[in-house]
Image (tube, rainbow, N blue to C red):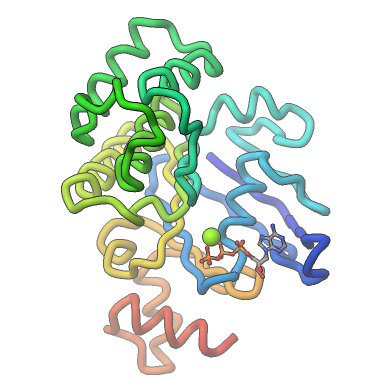
Length: 246
Ligand SMILES: Nc1ncnc2c1ncn2[C@@H]1O[C@H](COP(=O)(O)OP(=O)(O)OP(=O)(O)O)[C@@H](O)[C@H]1O
Ligand SMILES: [Mg+2]
């Protein structure tokens, strides 16, 4: 479970609030989609939730652990796939996975079986001996996904994870999201792909200009927009209308 309470962040360079008094509760057992136009504040929110960025105001909680006061414990409960799969280019893929396994102190046996399973599902098992610098963007993305699961985190946070993935990998990613939430874990991901969000998410939040403008399920979004003629429209249409109103 991930909880953000009234978080705000202004980057020194811009002087404008990238995230503005945002509160969100992402429950266990649900695939939670995070939507919003470019520059809306999705990555900033995700970085605050993961403890990579300190908010100016407000607090992040991971499974009741406060990120500000207990970051090491909170971060252990998170698997993160960030929006840019730039890694240590000089390392071989298996060295990187071992490094992440060491960071999270994953026992060798568990580490091996998880790497075996996910590397096979993402079809990178025969790439693990290659140096990361020689991998394509999509392969690096797959490696990031495998690395994020090595400690079997209770909370899986992904920033635009489908970008660059081939259809097989994209399918596997969605399957794994479903498996994890069926097992009671938490999945929180941002995307611009409305069709994916519409089919996959149990719950959605829409952010615009740093503020949450919707938080609920698709049925609730349709009901909310019914008056504006949105009762049976696609998520894409509802999203475009909702964001245009901000
Ligand atoms: N490192 C930074 N320094 C200054 N401003 C930043 C920085 N990162 C983001 N911003 C600004 O903060 C705001 C929110 O950016 P953020 O990256 O969180 O948006 P996003 O919703 O993830 O967008 P996208 O869909 O393009 O990934 C934008 O106005 C952006 O210009
Ligand atoms: Mg972003």
